[in-house]
Amino acid sequence: MKKIETTLESVVSDLTAFYDYKVWEFLTLNGVAIDEGTTEIQWIFSRYGAIDDVVIYYAPVKNSETVPSVVDLIPSAIISQREIVDMFGITVENSEKGLYLDEDSLSAPLATCRI
Image (cartoon, rainbow, N blue to C red):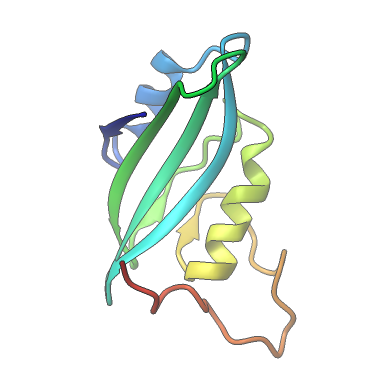
């Protein structure tokens, strides 16, 4: 596994330079609550045909910041982006709230979980 730090300002260009849909499978966009105001956002990829070739791009994000969308590059990322919005309460460009949680559900239930 290879973990590569990026920033919100450069993640789209970093992923554009890295991602080749013929080589890499986009697994998911993940969040890990670091502290009360910070979440690590992770874009996770696996090489097709390889057992342990995983690359994770990650960026620490203040929960008040907006995460850029990567849907133009990876259309299937829309589901993971909307999950981040629901589960962490973080704003992701062009990603609506309400994919997983009912109106009466606890808002952003994973935002308070910490590593």
